[in-house]
Length: 229
Length: 297
Ligand SMILES: Nc1ncnc2c1ncn2[C@@H]1O[C@H](COP(=O)(O)OP(=O)(O)OP(=O)(O)O)[C@@H](O)[C@H]1O
Ligand SMILES: [Mg+2]
Image 1 (cartoon, each protein chain N blue to C red):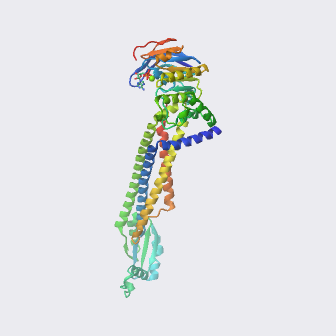
Image 2: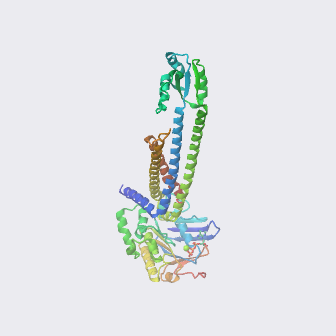
Image 3: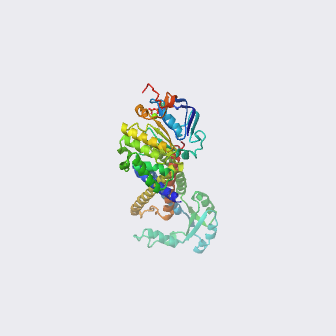
């Protein structure tokens, strides 16, 4: 599902965000990716969705080498991934409903399916009563849940979540993680980026820890105790 | 088929709703197209009028060839084929001394000062029209070879001025229209660049959820199409309205020798098509080009 081999990423301003990252996430697996701020977590996610290209190394997602994929095929690969971005990336002039429905329109879903599916996922994240609101009328946590609903709506094979609970209260956070866990149990591969230790500790899961652009620990049930925070 | 129709509806709805969602930008784009086309249209109308004016002046610029007094009217009339045979002469009309006097008298109709003037002080004459005013001097020289003709009057200064004015007007028109086109493309490109820049995050997000380039482009194309067409139709209406207003005011001077040409279909149709063409190119072409840089992810 996900394979990174010796990946380096140097941004155009000279920042070396990743310095030889390798890990693998098999189909159906669930893992947390943890690490301090600036350690390179979002960079890994941008590489996985093909928003940026690695300076060196191999990135394979759902069987596709991201370096050799044809531009024409990229949209179809991205449709197999549900991404929750750290900054939500909602379209501000579209309603909550349209922001979610939008992801279905992109893949050419029939209107009838859209009308059934969108209210269902909005209910799943507890936002059905905000369907008509615009993103700027929502709290940070509510916007985050719209982003989650959008990532779930197409039943992707792989879900990549960048701090999906960063703006939620502990009860909501737990609820969302339980939801992702449930989706994982139904067969979806899930990678969750977070630095909320208390939350991670509640799950008996694989935890990949990154610091300074390098993987420093990758094990079951062990949340690497990084210092800087 | 069903999915395709859904898509088309979606693109059109998206294109239209985006015009309103980015109201200020849409308004600015339409204003730029309208302003540019009004400037261009005014200039075209000005150039057409100057050209028509020159045409009028040219057609009045005739050579008057007086026939020698010793010739009888029938001998004088007999010269016509020889005059017509000369190169560059488009027509030669015989005017007898009686006709000349009458037309002269008609211009001063309220006075009866010509009543008892002897018709023989007028000469028979030919009003000669040339094809190309710029060759009027050579034509005049050739006419002098006909011995039976006396004075041959042609106003070289006016002819020369008209020729150079027409040349200058033609060149200035070509240059100004070219400059206007370049400026408009530049302004439109920047407007569209700004509009798409404002929406670059939205475009990037579309790509991240797996939208194809066509899916992203179509609403922009429809948006650009509607803005471009709206701009060109508004500009056409404005140019036409303003011009007709100006032309109706010129009516006061109709006693003078020139009034503005009418906005006939031979003018309105090409201008309408030109405006629509520019609106289309700028609206659709501009948005496709400006979008491309954001679609390369
Ligand atoms: N577009 C960019 N251009 C230049 N440098 C960048 C860019 N994005 C990130 N960086 C730098 O790369 C490093 C890793 O950033 P990244 O966003 O991957 O960290 P992160 O682990 O997601 O942090 P956080 O927990 O705060 O979200 C940081 O030093 C950051 O400043
Ligand atoms: Mg991050």
